[in-house]
Length: 111
Length: 113
Image (tube, rainbow over all chains, first blue to last red; front, side, top):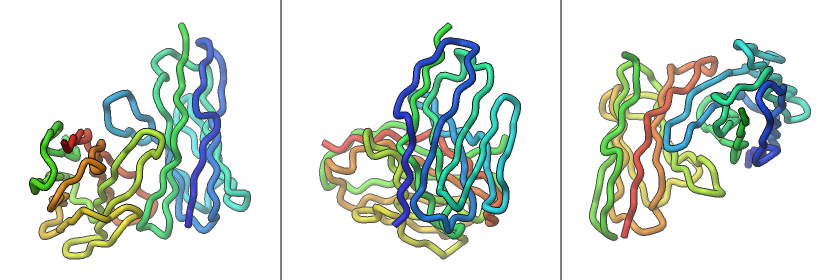
């Protein structure tokens, strides 16, 4: 059964720092991996989707990488801002049907 | 505006009283799914549907029912709610291919007394 973990569980950084969030999964037979952002009391917003054949995706200050063979993904946030404060979730897509989410990393960016 | 809508957004009910949470999407998506989110357990998939009249169990289907009679709607039914179903529920949808992102509804906060 697929299991997804995220490290760290929480992170607090001063504004302007670059940071890395980590996601690990146990079964490498995935179709894709997706990173989401969740603000308190709100739904999820998709940030980046990496297909299993890809190594990375970039959107603005965000860069996500995928190493399927080792079961790992990282989300890199450059020049962090207070508006980046949220919970970040990764999810793996098993065979295009079943999605498994990690527990999330709660990020606080201090002004 | 392309979106996934859920109703109600908040619901307080009592044990055993049947309820339905509706989910609708206006993007002509084939795939729809329900999740519940609990502190310390994260998001867990309840049921999903690959297309009309096709549904399948996720990781935590016990105590829930779904139906997919139309492409745009995917209601979640709790026939006899219990307190352990108190949770935050999310509906999501996407096109059928694995290259497409999931779009999430705003969530329904359910409390079962």
